[in-house]
Image (cartoon, rainbow, N blue to C red; front, side, top):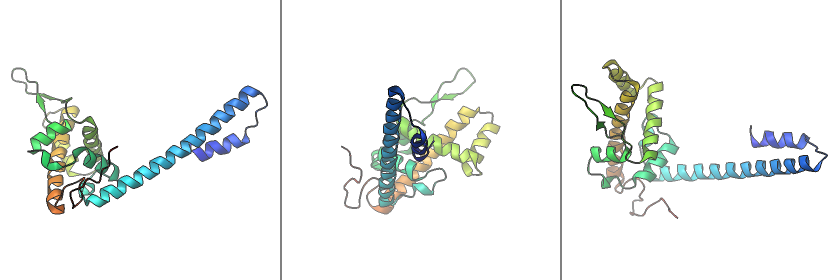
Amino acid sequence: MRADTAAALLRTVRPRDIAAKTLRLLAVDLVAEIRRLGQRISTADTDIATAVTHTSTTLTSLYGIGIGLAGKILARVGDIHRFRSAAAFASYTGTAHIEVSSGDVVRHRLSRAGDRQFNHALHMMALSQIRHQTDGRAYYQRKRAAGKGRKEAMRCLKRRLSDTAYRRLLRDAQHNGGGPGRTLGGGSIVQRG
């Protein structure tokens, strides 16, 4: 229910006893708080969009990454040059496979290490790609056809997307002269406080 709908409903309520009047006042306060939070979210979305646009990143051209996920990725990565390789980047994102083999059966499991927020961003990107006709979906289906389970195929796709994001961030850094999260003058556009 939207705050405006809730406010309209509250205007029709005319309580007579003190308990009902108190409940109505609390509901009015909650609706006002929801409106304030909505405004804060809108302002934050605008600020994130401005910051992402300012970095000139091409992450948003990857299928499944919008402004919000691009902002999360850029904020979590900082300077891409701190990662020596795609494998180090995958370890940071929690998409590096951990082998848990037994005998002739070779299996990999989810790494619980790494930045879980970044891993979640890659997961959302992977879900988006699987749901639509993309190269990611074709890759996922090839892994499934090769005998991998849903979770294993998803882990493989997330690792592939991690490598894709790494290459894209490197290319952006070379093109922009600084790197995502940095201005051309070298100062950070992300303010922490």
